[in-house]
Image (tube, rainbow, N blue to C red; front, side):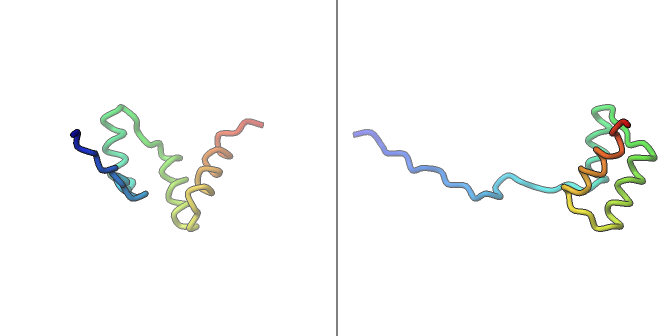
Amino acid sequence: MAKQKKPVVKSAKAGRFVIGSAGFGKISAVEGIRMTAAMKKRAGDAHAQGLTAEEHRRAIIRSHRKG
């Protein structure tokens, strides 16, 4: 008789982690990506205003929009 495999159950948060801006900067530097002064200012402003991730994304999109 073959062994029955038990299903592997993982929680929704398994394998997820959050890195800070300094860690993200180091990873990006390896890939050759550098934050400009404007990008740093925008991130600082978003943090100071307490924007959610979605609001921060909207601010980034708004800054790159033409017209």
